[in-house]
Image (cartoon, rainbow, N blue to C red; front, side, top):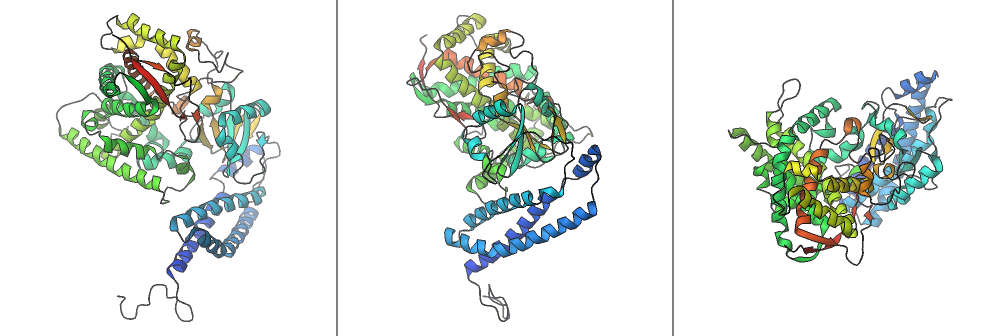
Length: 579
């Protein structure tokens, strides 16, 4: 019961009608939306700090900042009036379509706001004049506002980029979902991204929206770049040969135990199986036996929910939206962190020293002597596992299908096991693993044709010059390993799976950035060596156990709907080898 004298919910004072629950929801949404949209549009008008100064000083031009500020204020007032005029109409229309569902209202409001801000930016884009001598990259226009080329790119991104390369050359721009993307294709153009400094081409502004809800705050792209580099250095110190030697036997044992349930033969989803196995082996090697012992079906589902945070929706939409996948991601993050906290506390209290990443993190400090907090340790453990899981599971699955399609090559890989390790195929060792050169080349060729990540991105913070063009601040600057690694200008028989191409020293004519599945430069993947140890050990064990075949000749197509390009319908046939 309300207190005496307290007006009922929805009461607007003398002379105003009582509001229904739906009306109240509409008005709350309207005020939230107009506030958020105005702030977003205002931010879109304001250049990043220092951008105007940099661009104008380099061109020798002059800008009347006072006039620009007056115009900007007027523009913002126009925008606010537009929002207030359209807001109530929008809400009423949305209610009729959605029945007043809060989630539907929020999603439509977000989409409408993005479109409005995009159109407004187009309208006032002339307020910040470009230097007269600036030559922008070729721009691929689209008749569709805001969305731009999102549909064509999403349907077949490799074909889209290859066609653009043939028509426009190694550098070109286009718009998708209100953002301008500039691609750098070919080794020479890609050098700009891989050799850049973080203050010029920034990674945090691109990836933090994806990684922070998954890994947690205080790690990876949620911290200043110098701190992130220190964290990577600490992690890399634990990924050493001494630990790899122990990892081989751990991974081999886990693999044998996992495939006991497969029996003598049948058909299985290879990608799902290898994704599960990669989590088990990585957790045992990197997190330690305490955390690995807690990996059951429930925890495996938590990892899957957490991994679901790496989605196009997570990259495009605000993280606070009440989407089901976002809620599952956030719940999984909390529960996995709690598991890690207990393991961290137990390890800190134990006198036993282990050779794993967890021990490395607990014993490490930053340059200033500060030890890592439990939250930082847990976040770095999550990041290391999930970042590596994508590469290893996708690469392992694709290689399985390449070997199943070429039975002669598959048999050569099996015979290599006997040649290197012995006819009786004793337990694997790290030194033997290094000598499996054909298997190594098969992994390398798989990574060339099916790199897990198709695009690496940075946000331009300052004007960047490449191939005679100037990329302005605000562009998403991209390199595509997938396209670079199959360019006809660089690769002979570029679409053929041919591991023997690496018998030569320079398979891509010595071009430095023609082959970049793990990136290059300051942001090169620190887990590359562990990934090779993991994949080679798993597939060595699998080749000893089974023969693999395609089902009715079906070789999977690429699933472009996910951020990691996985095989579509990846079911494979297998039969146990005769002893």
